[in-house]
Length: 380
Image (cartoon, rainbow, N blue to C red; front, side, top):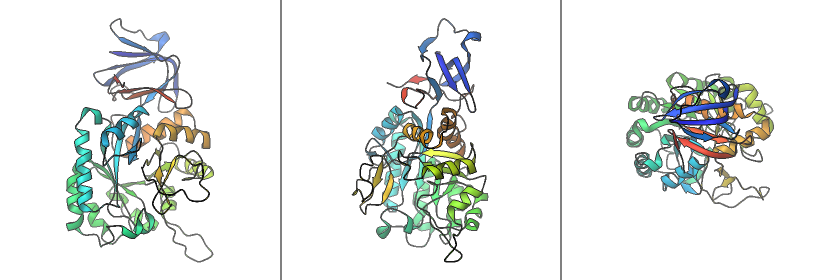
């Protein structure tokens, strides 16, 4: 049994200072204040020295880590993210690849998931195949411009199987409902997310009964549908804000470029504490840095100089969220652990509770990760 003493435990909605937490056989077996909780003599004892102990971070939207694409080098990418406190990650594949490439990439990730070194890869976030090419990288050469057709997408859906936790889609694509129904046949618990889209709220809401419950990188790569030239219309962002049952993903970079800090505060106010998700959307694009972005170090740019993901890890995104919005450490653990795990159905992690997975991180007050514990074992 592992006992971590002298810790401040980060619970779902409060802190427990001067506490101890126990883990055995990969599960959390108990916790409490040190003054009222005895530590068995046969425990392996770790001293947190007053630092925070919270649930491991859960990044549901991440293409890469440390300069390594998941579809090429999943183990180094997974390891990099694990060292930054991400104990559960959905490897993300993108819609700039064709059918054969996506099937091959799925196989690469699935093979890594079976290795001990890839233990924190827990599934796939399929940012493919059917989104709106107008709102994505390599829009001119996008291989999925043709009508939605089962003979094209079923090999990808079947290859991903139940490892696909999320399919991102543009609800305005014709025949997209058939894709949704076929994906649900392969994995009845799969979630859907609206992304790279200019769908109307009505088109989005029509898919919510089938599992659409996430807004991919909220306020990024979405269109607008003005009713009149002089009026702002309603589109994806408004639908995500309005619908209580849709989680809003947010990329929180250091300068608030993906999402302006004022917008971050507005989204937080609208969505509340339990429908906001921090993601990294980490990538490895190395296109030219456009004018006005000199000195920006945590964004990626594609070949055309357009923003294409980030160079973030989730711990840094948490730190940025605290800076931009005044969120507390309790808040950011919720946004980066509890909420994402609930959004994609990983119900055995994401909070400190008896019986949950012993995926834990020790951090300081600025979310600098000091120690990572995966399944009750300290990560070296």
